Length: 503
Image (cartoon, rainbow, N blue to C red; front, side, top):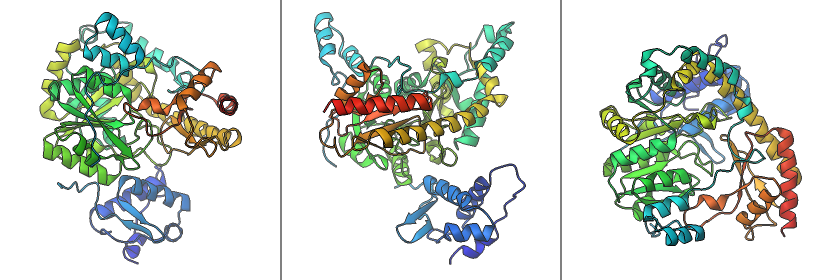
């Protein structure tokens, strides 16, 4: 068995405090990268490898699942696991017609009526039509994190420490892209947990992900340039790009993520692609290595840009969070965007960009024109929260909590929604997609169900509303992170009755 003998020599330290699956993942990845396990090598079966290394099969399976998710190995149906022919660290330089959407093409009857009466600009019409009223509900299945689980007592102590007698460097902020200790903490975190290659100087702190996206669009593209976005996708991205005066090209998402081939056919002049490769919103798809490499090659060839939206990467329940697309890029064409609002609490309104070194000064200068600088109130508090280990501890607690709540939703759905909705588990995120079951297939009107649910006190967002063009899928987005098991079970029962009553 090729490579089998090499694996017997793996040196794992079982006295190490770190998890064994991570040690095994690291050793196997190194052997693949340095050629001791060449491309095409067949790995032993999980049972055999576990026996040879005196490990549990779960440990071996978790390590191999992580390697599979990151593209280092591949499975062949009925024939085991092999080292991948293309590795993520070896980035290689390498259509149905669709009209590009222009600002103003996303309309509702209400938006048209307002435009007629008040003479809104085309951009104003587009922004008003894209924007949705905030859910503003605490009822299941409203999206978002569990605010009640956040350690506000710790946060308050840290805030008092900094702001009881703030020094002049805080009270008289001179913008350099953010509070330097916070930039250092973010860079260290991203390097370890997300595989992002950056130093603190490349971090620019902003007021949330949407400001980050809008800033990137205005610095890198001209008015009326084309930008590709995922369809279905997050409306906030379309809004930020529309506000920057860009033309939006909707590119389909399949089981491998954004289809860059279709994107090129629909928007041949596009110079920006906005993607969420680690966990696409709303479908939860993880972009394949093949698509990641193709996207990077597209950006290199077009002298374009990739905007990577990494909005909830912390909440992955199988293995460690997937490495970022930015870490694969050797061309300096990826702008990485992150946010703390979903991880900590929504009102925090702190996000950040990671930009290539040569672009830092233009980005900061442009941001000064747009809003001077991001408020300093929470930045030193967040820096200390990260440095003192509270951030990592909170994420660990929330992973356990949210994983249990996802399982509670799946259990409740099996009991109360059989035949009506089908829900598959997701290895990451804070919501699940409920697809039409046999009784609703081909006949589901998700918006009607969502309205009926809202009237009954259940928040279930219609999947079709995440499409800017014609919806190709029906379903419901069910957030579980913010709701305990009892609330999830009660809301699931109510939802089943609502759907059954609606015929």
